[in-house]
Length: 460
Image (cartoon, rainbow, N blue to C red):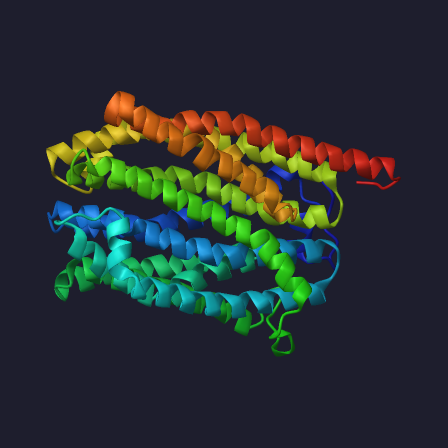
């Protein structure tokens, strides 16, 4: 392994010269830990609401989840777009452009959070109906969604700032913000839900305050100069070029998350036909599954700055090595998680409810949906790599085909002919097909870039 130059920042060495497998692990593992912490936001709410022994409130937390996904989608537009440009700028040695992009990310996040909150609150009753809430869950869902919308600045700020920190290799800083935010949520949930008697509305308040704490921690790192880059007052007005590059990558990233939200809403609306308690069971199972999902998302997010930096440096050979190492690490890890879910599914569901019907349905859902885990890591890594390279059209195509061409039609078709069980198998089938397609597309793209570079006389 090459030795680090003492004058070379350790974050730059990690992105540019560390062994691929070690770089993937060093960037990915802290983010996987951070993702586990983030999923506790939802699991903690689900757990404490489950202690109320009100399955309709439990169902409402699941029905409201797409609102959080939309908030993340909009913040992802800025976070992903800005992070991709920052990493590529650092790889090309343009620190000034990287700091200008960082400052633009701060400004755009604040503006977008105000727009999301205003639009959501103005359309609240229609939004709650669209989410699939029925007579018994409408009021609870509306209470939760209203508070989440009011706290959009903190939810979106916490998510985006984490992405911006990771783009420069400051992974541990971004994870600390997640830890503080989740710890605050865990402490505040029982206070607001039970001590203050706010029930589901209290769970939403605790979530918002937890995100506010995480946002404050990330801002403190920038204010104290602990980061490689810093926002600058002279960069408050972004250039047209920077805006164009942020939105070129960011808008498709947002559409990807929005399409996922649409599929989630379709899934919930189909599940309602099998009873609102089935929605509660699916909600618990999906939250548990998200623990496995955040493993691949963490590794994918960890490889994004690696891919972006080396794409900016035109080191395509290293990008191929990172891809191979990343897929091997994430697939092996997910198989272990899948084994745990298969053995302990009823006990895991039982942590959140004592309803025998919810436990039985939830275990069935978890044991079916866990079959996506060997495939989704490679898909996520391919999408984030294309975003890092400034090629969002490929990332968006993967998501478009995955959600609208395969998953939603399969969801409707299998539900019609095979009922609830068929509906559950729509996602594993989709992910198996998309893994092969997405990895092949990324590998061929990188090989083409490498061959083009070699033909022009460059060196990787």
